[in-house]
Length: 180
Image 1 (cartoon, one colour):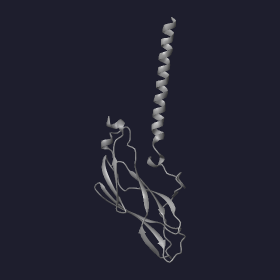
Image 2 (cartoon, helix red, strand yellow):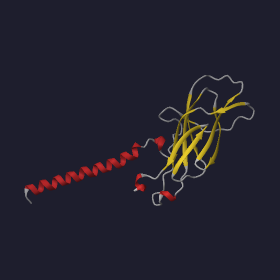
Image 3 (cartoon, rainbow, N blue to C red):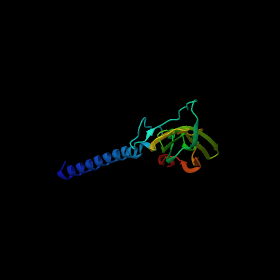
Image 4 (cartoon, one colour):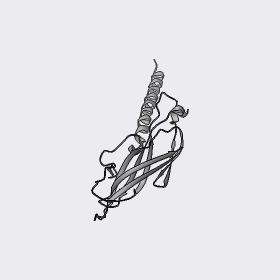
Protein backbone atom coordinates (compact mmCIF):
# COMPACT_ATOMS: atom_id res chain seq x y z
CA UNK A 1 0.00 0.00 0.00
CA UNK A 2 1.43 3.37 -0.95
CA UNK A 3 1.67 6.40 1.29
CA UNK A 4 -1.31 8.12 -0.40
CA UNK A 5 -3.61 5.14 0.23
CA UNK A 6 -2.47 4.88 3.84
CA UNK A 7 -3.18 8.59 4.42
CA UNK A 8 -6.60 8.24 2.80
CA UNK A 9 -7.47 5.28 5.07
CA UNK A 10 -6.26 7.13 8.16
CA UNK A 11 -8.33 10.19 7.17
CA UNK A 12 -11.46 8.05 6.69
CA UNK A 13 -10.85 6.30 10.01
CA UNK A 14 -10.53 9.68 11.76
CA UNK A 15 -13.73 10.96 10.15
CA UNK A 16 -15.60 7.80 11.19
CA UNK A 17 -14.20 8.05 14.71
CA UNK A 18 -15.26 11.70 15.03
CA UNK A 19 -18.73 10.94 13.62
CA UNK A 20 -19.11 8.03 16.02
CA UNK A 21 -18.10 10.14 18.99
CA UNK A 22 -20.35 12.99 17.93
CA UNK A 23 -23.31 10.66 17.52
CA UNK A 24 -22.71 9.19 20.96
CA UNK A 25 -22.44 12.63 22.50
CA UNK A 26 -25.61 13.89 20.84
CA UNK A 27 -27.59 10.90 22.04
CA UNK A 28 -26.47 11.22 25.64
CA UNK A 29 -26.74 15.03 25.62
CA UNK A 30 -30.39 14.85 24.54
CA UNK A 31 -31.22 12.75 27.61
CA UNK A 32 -29.23 15.05 29.88
CA UNK A 33 -30.78 18.23 28.45
CA UNK A 34 -34.22 17.32 29.78
CA UNK A 35 -34.28 18.94 33.23
CA UNK A 36 -35.34 16.63 36.07
CA UNK A 37 -38.50 18.69 36.66
CA UNK A 38 -39.57 17.97 33.07
CA UNK A 39 -39.09 14.18 33.33
CA UNK A 40 -42.09 12.02 34.22
CA UNK A 41 -41.69 10.32 37.57
CA UNK A 42 -38.50 12.12 38.63
CA UNK A 43 -38.99 13.41 42.15
CA UNK A 44 -36.88 15.10 44.77
CA UNK A 45 -37.56 13.33 48.06
CA UNK A 46 -36.82 16.24 50.40
CA UNK A 47 -35.52 19.41 48.81
CA UNK A 48 -34.80 20.17 45.18
CA UNK A 49 -31.87 22.21 43.88
CA UNK A 50 -34.12 25.29 43.95
CA UNK A 51 -34.50 24.97 47.74
CA UNK A 52 -38.18 24.00 47.63
CA UNK A 53 -39.19 21.34 50.13
CA UNK A 54 -41.23 18.45 48.74
CA UNK A 55 -44.55 18.33 50.55
CA UNK A 56 -47.56 16.04 50.61
CA UNK A 57 -51.12 16.37 51.81
CA UNK A 58 -51.45 15.32 55.43
CA UNK A 59 -54.47 14.68 57.59
CA UNK A 60 -55.53 17.67 59.71
CA UNK A 61 -55.62 17.47 63.49
CA UNK A 62 -59.31 16.83 64.28
CA UNK A 63 -59.08 18.86 67.51
CA UNK A 64 -58.06 22.04 65.64
CA UNK A 65 -60.26 24.42 63.62
CA UNK A 66 -58.78 25.66 60.35
CA UNK A 67 -59.13 28.36 57.76
CA UNK A 68 -59.15 26.92 54.22
CA UNK A 69 -58.05 28.79 51.10
CA UNK A 70 -56.71 28.07 47.60
CA UNK A 71 -53.05 27.11 47.51
CA UNK A 72 -50.57 29.74 46.40
CA UNK A 73 -48.37 28.59 43.51
CA UNK A 74 -46.13 30.12 40.88
CA UNK A 75 -45.10 27.28 38.57
CA UNK A 76 -46.89 24.28 37.09
CA UNK A 77 -44.99 21.61 35.15
CA UNK A 78 -47.09 18.99 33.34
CA UNK A 79 -45.15 15.74 32.89
CA UNK A 80 -46.71 13.06 30.65
CA UNK A 81 -45.56 9.47 30.89
CA UNK A 82 -43.43 8.38 27.91
CA UNK A 83 -45.17 6.28 25.27
CA UNK A 84 -44.23 2.61 25.03
CA UNK A 85 -41.69 2.34 22.19
CA UNK A 86 -43.14 -0.81 20.57
CA UNK A 87 -46.76 0.45 20.24
CA UNK A 88 -47.93 3.27 17.95
CA UNK A 89 -48.34 6.41 20.07
CA UNK A 90 -51.67 7.29 18.43
CA UNK A 91 -53.25 4.19 19.96
CA UNK A 92 -51.84 4.68 23.47
CA UNK A 93 -53.12 6.38 26.58
CA UNK A 94 -50.62 7.66 29.16
CA UNK A 95 -50.78 8.93 32.71
CA UNK A 96 -49.84 12.50 33.55
CA UNK A 97 -48.04 13.86 36.59
CA UNK A 98 -48.15 17.52 37.60
CA UNK A 99 -45.43 19.27 39.57
CA UNK A 100 -46.72 22.35 41.38
CA UNK A 101 -44.26 24.82 42.84
CA UNK A 102 -45.38 27.50 45.23
CA UNK A 103 -44.73 29.00 48.63
CA UNK A 104 -46.57 28.83 51.92
CA UNK A 105 -47.14 32.40 53.15
CA UNK A 106 -46.32 31.63 56.78
CA UNK A 107 -44.95 29.03 59.18
CA UNK A 108 -48.35 27.45 59.90
CA UNK A 109 -49.94 26.90 56.49
CA UNK A 110 -49.87 23.49 54.82
CA UNK A 111 -51.56 21.69 51.95
CA UNK A 112 -54.99 20.38 52.83
CA UNK A 113 -56.70 18.70 49.90
CA UNK A 114 -56.78 18.32 46.14
CA UNK A 115 -59.93 17.68 44.10
CA UNK A 116 -60.09 16.89 40.38
CA UNK A 117 -62.86 16.93 37.79
CA UNK A 118 -62.47 16.15 34.10
CA UNK A 119 -64.74 17.06 31.22
CA UNK A 120 -63.13 15.84 27.98
CA UNK A 121 -59.87 17.74 27.54
CA UNK A 122 -60.49 20.19 30.38
CA UNK A 123 -59.30 19.29 33.88
CA UNK A 124 -60.46 21.35 36.83
CA UNK A 125 -58.17 20.94 39.85
CA UNK A 126 -58.61 22.65 43.21
CA UNK A 127 -55.57 22.57 45.51
CA UNK A 128 -56.40 23.86 48.98
CA UNK A 129 -54.29 24.97 51.94
CA UNK A 130 -55.18 25.23 55.60
CA UNK A 131 -54.06 27.31 58.53
CA UNK A 132 -55.10 26.83 62.18
CA UNK A 133 -57.65 29.41 63.32
CA UNK A 134 -56.38 31.82 65.95
CA UNK A 135 -52.77 30.79 65.49
CA UNK A 136 -49.92 33.26 65.58
CA UNK A 137 -47.62 32.29 62.73
CA UNK A 138 -44.26 33.69 61.75
CA UNK A 139 -44.59 35.55 58.47
CA UNK A 140 -42.00 33.54 56.59
CA UNK A 141 -42.21 32.41 52.99
CA UNK A 142 -41.67 28.64 52.70
CA UNK A 143 -41.17 27.42 49.12
CA UNK A 144 -42.66 24.01 48.36
CA UNK A 145 -43.02 21.48 45.55
CA UNK A 146 -46.02 19.15 45.31
CA UNK A 147 -46.36 16.18 42.96
CA UNK A 148 -49.77 14.86 41.93
CA UNK A 149 -51.08 12.43 39.34
CA UNK A 150 -53.98 13.53 37.18
CA UNK A 151 -56.85 11.07 37.29
CA UNK A 152 -57.44 8.99 34.18
CA UNK A 153 -55.33 8.53 31.08
CA UNK A 154 -54.57 10.79 28.15
CA UNK A 155 -54.06 10.29 24.43
CA UNK A 156 -52.34 12.54 21.94
CA UNK A 157 -54.03 15.95 21.98
CA UNK A 158 -54.37 19.40 23.54
CA UNK A 159 -55.59 19.80 27.12
CA UNK A 160 -56.30 22.58 29.59
CA UNK A 161 -55.53 22.19 33.27
CA UNK A 162 -57.43 24.73 35.36
CA UNK A 163 -55.54 24.83 38.66
CA UNK A 164 -57.36 27.06 41.17
CA UNK A 165 -58.93 28.84 38.16
CA UNK A 166 -55.61 29.54 36.43
CA UNK A 167 -55.34 27.91 33.00
CA UNK A 168 -52.32 25.83 32.07
CA UNK A 169 -52.39 24.50 28.52
CA UNK A 170 -50.49 21.32 27.77
CA UNK A 171 -50.17 18.86 24.94
CA UNK A 172 -49.60 15.14 24.77
CA UNK A 173 -47.66 14.39 21.61
CA UNK A 174 -45.63 11.64 20.05
CA UNK A 175 -41.87 11.97 20.14
CA UNK A 176 -40.09 13.08 16.96
CA UNK A 177 -39.03 9.48 16.35
CA UNK A 178 -42.67 8.28 16.41
CA UNK A 179 -43.84 11.11 14.17
CA UNK A 180 -41.49 10.01 11.36
